Length: 113
Image (cartoon, rainbow, N blue to C red; front, top):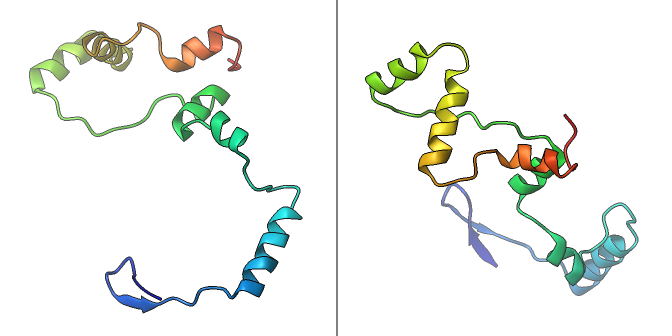
């Protein structure tokens, strides 16, 4: 079978034989640390970002954001915590809840500290 590589070149792929595929599947079934997913597992799955937020690993995501100089100057002039205030203003403009997903998870007791 031929497929296109990430670089755009055509490469020949060798698929496993039925015997090799059966051996792979036996290995999967025999691995208690990495069992094959059931339909119930897929129903419980959540996007990675939601899972990271739920376990408390994600605080803020650094981004490169272009804003007008006067907007930046106004927020910086308000003193320490200007980035937090800018985030709150963006949340309000986006129509999002006042508190972050992490803060809501903390209130529900799903995130430490």
